[in-house]
Amino acid sequence: MLQGLGFSNVAIRVGDGSRGWLEHAPFDKILVSVAAERTPPALLEQLKPGGRLVLPLVSEDVQFLTVIDKDVAGQLKTRKLIPVRFSRLETV
Image 1 (spheres, rainbow, N blue to C red):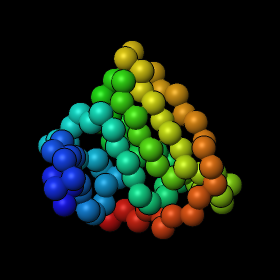
Image 2: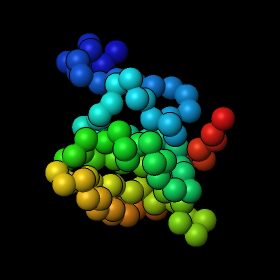
Image 3: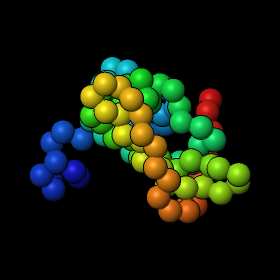
Image 4: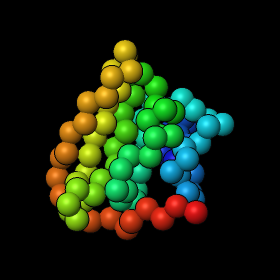
């Protein structure tokens, strides 16, 4: 479907994404569609320097859409954007 829209460099994984997707890493961008208590370490490790991770994170029982940018030196900058409501991450 995405190729029909002109996107050829997008990979989609359905399942427990908390361990990332090492076979396709590193990633420029990662979009997570379930809320987590904390950022899965594997996702941060598999994010390229200069990359961006977007995910809903739970903070005091409220979910916030959160953006984590990794600079070229590997330093992380986290920003909470807006309150959201997503299904919770269930790891297996």
